[in-house]
Image (cartoon, rainbow, N blue to C red; front, side, top):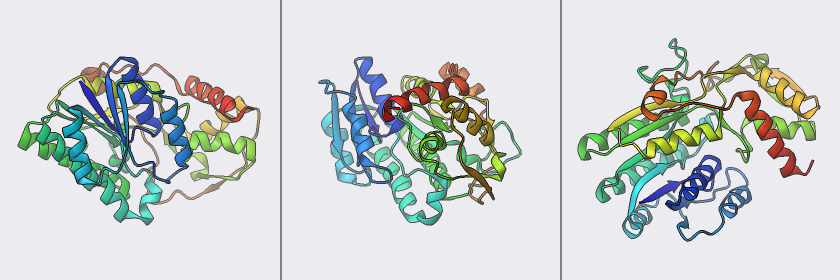
Length: 317
């Protein structure tokens, strides 16, 4: 059984690939190593996977339809973990065409190839951002999620709907996992935990929305990977599943925790929350517990401690 991991050089993708490889499973990674953030970080992620015989890394783009088809044909792909995407809600505001091209058309290429080759399970990385501003808190999958606040969540919701099309027409087992603020060692450098840790060393001024009174449901990478692996192993028909810790904290609390870990004050000032960002993300994970046996084990405090210890080693502090 061979799993295709798109975006496998990224934060979540490389952790997933490592987990599958440790299980002795064959993995094909497809990643274009784009420069949204430093490609050297992604190449480091790949290097840390080693060179096992059951790993193949292909540098290419999910928008390349012929390449995608060739990968499915040549590598006998049986499962897909589609993590490749243009990420970041606020960046999508200024470049919606790129986000639509990658997140919708790239996903369509993968679903079409997967349907032709008859893959057993297609797992799509989605996002808690699809909920936008909603009265249903904590966020639950029965919400219509039809009021996205920016292009990024709109394109992710579109990919979820495309998944239903392929389930309906081709009986594809399609599970969309709505990730909630994933963080941890080797995390994306544009995400707030790593940015705040960097700021403890550089004194860069950080800007906190609404005086730090916005809440995010930070979910540790290991708990996220447990959910993705479980979804790959379970053909569920068509499902939308929240994958989050279920314990949001305020941005001000996040800052205070990292200050305590580092022993350094963070230089910050408040700014207004942009229209692209909701005041809270908050996961109802009952469905994931039922369908995927999800049991988040790592609290935010423990996860931030682990991330800080990694950060110190990385920066040789």
